Amino acid sequence: MIDPDILNFYELGLEQDRLKNPHRSIEYHRTMDILRRHLPPPPATVLDVGGGPGRYALALAALGYQVHLIDPVPLHIEQAQASSEAVDHHLAGIMFGDARHLDQPDACADAVLLLGPLYHLTSVADRHRAWSEARRVLRPGGTVVAAGASRYYTTWEMLSKGTLNLPGAQEAVQQHIATGQHRNPGRDYQRLWTTAYFHDPNELAGEAAAAGLTVRALLAVEGPAKLLPDLADRMREQASTQQLMAAIRRLETEPSVLGLSSHVLVIADITGGEQGAAQ
Image: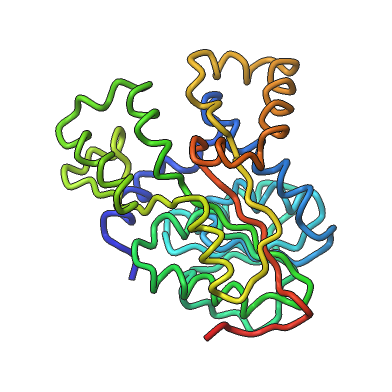
């Protein structure tokens, strides 16, 4: 069962247009840049686990991938179905499901995306189940791309937004740094998000390795770019967007940048053609 607070947050419908916001679009453009470089070529079969309303799934389908979207939020399933029907390149499948217990058979996918589940699975055991399921459904030679949210970025984000003075905010960021855990008991979803887990970047890579995967890359998605006060204006201009994208790409593997990135991606695969769930 999905945590009720997480479900309540996503049932507000904010996720569908979140990445269209110019201030947040850097996350989308950088993630797509990384996916284009690290996914096997189309028409590979991709499982987008926790794919939400389908922003990445639909973009990959337009590139020729066979994308199956899986999500535990009913509203997201409805939104993904409507969006898929409205475009020329439909999703290959849309289904209700949980990253910890996938219904798909062993070795059915060339790539698995975990771009949302890991930062809403707050226990080590649940995250390990999600990683192990991704490994189980992956074909030999396939790739897992998984996202974590950095526990060190949130202090700077709250400072830049002026939200550290909200009730409980100071305690929240202290908890992020100490344990990675985030809660929003006041349910101020617009400003303080929902139940989540924030990773140390190296911890994210360690989780992939613990599931029997070989880590190929650990990459900063946005770096500190979301702290730029004029980021939205930069993202509205093509030349400025390209300049920013190139700057982040130059530094995407730099350890000192990883912790200051809102999101971190780990690229991993199965070594030696082995497949199956890690014990």
